[in-house]
Each structure stands twice: as structure tokens, then as C-alpha cells.
Image (cartoon, rainbow, N blue to C red; front, side, top):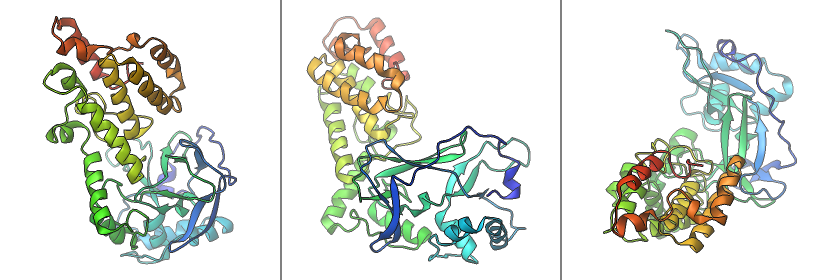
Length: 376
């Protein structure tokens, strides 16, 4: 259901998206949290849990001339009775400064989605609020097992597993940035949603929570300027500097993968880094930070001419990428069968072992500017 002010901004036709299937999920009581979403069957890493269209869309910022309670009540009133009843059953226990239940439901359950808003002097903001009846049943976790993505072309949300989910396991998403420290996460959740987090990561003993905070701080400082400040070199600098140890990057990024697994942060995705800022590992990656770490470790072993470890890690990197980019399969097969065909093969040895650098340095800069593995 669309507010009249939004309706004219939307495409009249959208690409067809498959309907979600309730065979994957069930909605039932989650102890201490009300209703929650649970897996009916085992869902693999990267598996689609559901696809869903919004039932309500409104501008994210609404002019003060229209009382929110009146606007939302009018929109809700235009829904069909089955949808209206399901919408009114969503969590609204925390009102905050909301004036009525309709506004409270929107504040607590709406997700921020982007629309292709036409330009102009008085154009709407591209960010809007969307209510998704099934996805709104996902409870929060500080180590979530699922993520959601908005597809403007199909006007649909996809909920995807970020690690394997067992049958009967609750499906959770993050309501706040997962790399926040524990106190800030709890304060933000209390302020915005009115609840105290009871996920397993927030119920740890104090010493374990301090370890968790340290891990999340470490993981948020693996790329770009933050990494440089922490003394972690970029791939380019490591290739060129013989004073750096061969394993300094490998050890750091293997440890990062361990911390991601321990903290349940497979969802972690450090946005806002350009390729140059991140030393060639910035920009979008189909498997988020896990994929960036795998890419970089494989590149390091390639630059060291370590064929056995290169094959091991490039195979893992390929598994991560090929779920979303099957067109890269031939490149990965080529590298596995013939490692010396890898674009940065032997570069650390060549640069730090003496001899002419010349064209190789220029080649490295060009390669890094494309981002890790973006040369496929």
C-alpha cells in the first residue's frame, strides 16, 4: 500500500520477482522476545530465505503539515482486512514519542529503502520507509545469521542467510550496526526500539564482553585509513616494502576470519571505503568483509609464489564469489590449474628480492586500483 505522495514517484511496472515461500520459515514464539521467524529446514550460507514486497511505503521525512498519526491511520485503513490485521499484530509495545499505535508500528518495524525519485527543486528524498510483514518478524541479534537487501527494480526485499542456518533455528537480523561496542549497541537499541538485547553475545560474562568489544574494534579497523593508523599495511605497500614480514598481512587477515566466526559477524560489511583507501580491497564485495579477507590472503600467497597455499585460499575465495558472480568461474579455474597466470603472481618476491621493478610497479598500481580480484 503506497501513500499518495509516493505513488507517483514509482515505476508503473517492475521486473517480476519470485514470490516468497513459507516452506522456508515459520513464525512462532521466541522466548523472551515475542514472536520470531524460524527456519523450517536447513538453509545454506547464501541461501534465499524469502522474497517479499512491502505492504506500506511512505516518505522517510514527512512535512509537519500532515500529522503522522493521521497519515499512517489513513494508509493503514486502505489495506485489505487480512493485511491490516497482520500489520496491527506487529510489535508496537515501544511508542517512544509516537502519538498512536499506527505511528508506533511504523517507527519500530519500517525498514529504510531507496526509490528512484525524479530530480527537481522540490523532489522527495530517495529514502523511504517500507513495512514488510514477514521480515518484520525477524528479531535482532548482535551476531545475526541473515541479512536483507532491497531491489528497486523488482520492488522487493530479499532475506538471505549469511551462514548456515539449522532447521528450527531462529532467523535474526541486526537492528543496529553490528560492529558497535556493547554499551553503545544496548543504549541504541533501548533508545530506538525500547528493549534490552538478550542475544547470546550480550549475555556473556563481563570479561567475555570486553573480549568481544576488542574483536569488533579490530574488525572495524582492517581497511583504509583505520588500518594504516593501526599499523596494518596495504597490499601494495606490503609488496614493495622488504622490511615488512612475509606473513604480516596473512596473519592479520586469518585472525580476522577467526574473529568473524567467533563473533557471528559474517554480515559485517565495511562500507564507504574506496579501492585506493582500502589498499585494493574496498568497494562492494558479494561476500562482504569475509570475501575481502579471503581475497587478500589468496593474493598474498600468490605474490609469495606459494602455490599450495595459493590454491587453498583462491579456492575458498572462489567459492565465496561464485555464488553471486558465476561469470568469474573460468578465471578461478585458470588460476587453480596454472597459478603463475594469477595477475600478481610472484610480485612480493620480485619487488623485495632485488632486481628491476620498473613496469611491475606500474602494473601493481594499476591492478590494485581495480580492487582485489576485480581484474577477473
